[in-house]
Length: 294
Image 1 (cartoon, one colour):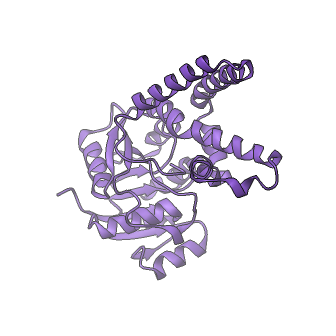
Image 2 (cartoon, helix red, strand yellow; image 1 turned 45 degrees about the vertical axis):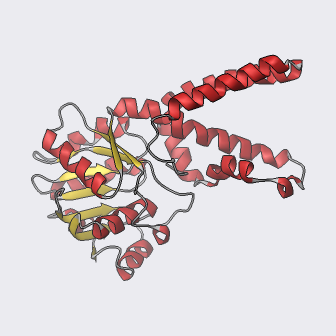
Image 3 (cartoon, helix red, strand yellow; image 1 turned 120 degrees about the vertical axis):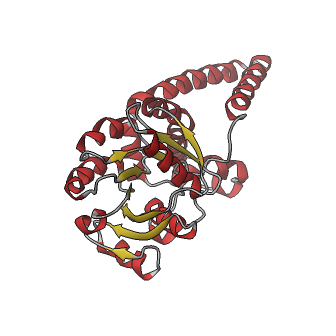
């Protein structure tokens, strides 16, 4: 059985932070879970619902914690760690739920006191719903969780964080931070861009077109319901990596549009066949469906 952390501090109590708290308690991976958030509402809700055992200010949350889970927006994590660093115990481990790993790997380790270690993680799980009221202990069951250690990260720290996420039900995959950002740009970030862009064009659709929308439309457009502020931050932070799949998509869309305009059925069929083959090739090792907002 993997390590049971004595005191786990969850910094940020939204959907993911709340789900980590629920899952850690359900799976017996934490003896005590303490929550911290900037806003009072999520804190009070988490305590009243038994999602956490205790709520505290930042100093009270991280003091004595052997595991700290950063569940704030990615853009806030550096300042959060810098503020918390003086109160971290020796041997404390930090992980996170952020969708971008390179900037965190570059900035967070240098903020930590000697003996504390950061091991990045990205659980590929979520929902277009936001807020701790939607937190679920089963959110990570069967979902990929990418763990992104640095070469200098002690093996024991990597093993402990990997075991923690596996203990919450996730399928753990290891990547270098930069490789994670490049790959997730293709399988998560670019699909969100396309869904958002398509949804934006629906302002020009016939008013009654929605009456004809079936499951195919709903499946494709679903992720456009994701939180705009969250996704604007994700796309801006990973903009260099996202540019590559977006350029490839733009070229492919232009090619297909040309074939449709020319009425070349044979060429269209060949294009669609190549598309299906590419999809099959990249999804053959998928361990579970990727949920929206991952």
